[in-house]
Length: 124
Image (cartoon, rainbow, N blue to C red; front, side):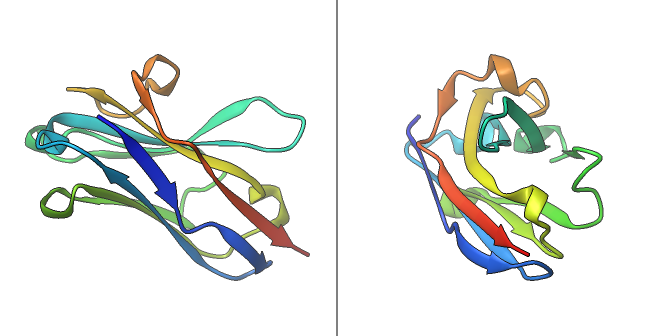
């Protein structure tokens, strides 16, 4: 599967953005999906994950984004989303979507497929 993330941009602290991850292929619903970010000078970190659809679509979040970010998927559109509210400067970074089949999206470092990333910059 090929993944393309988009929707990043520059936003003020307290603002919102919605990221999208478009996937190719006809088996999107069988993939657990993850959002992972990398801040300047730091390692990649897990942001949110959503399980492949038939297992119930469970969602998981990093503690740092719980209550502010929401992950979702639309299998009919082969697209995953990340709604980001109450953004903070610490949320700045490149956001990647990634995927592996039949997973819950939390074991992100083992994901098989990665998109190119979209830059989110939150100004204070």
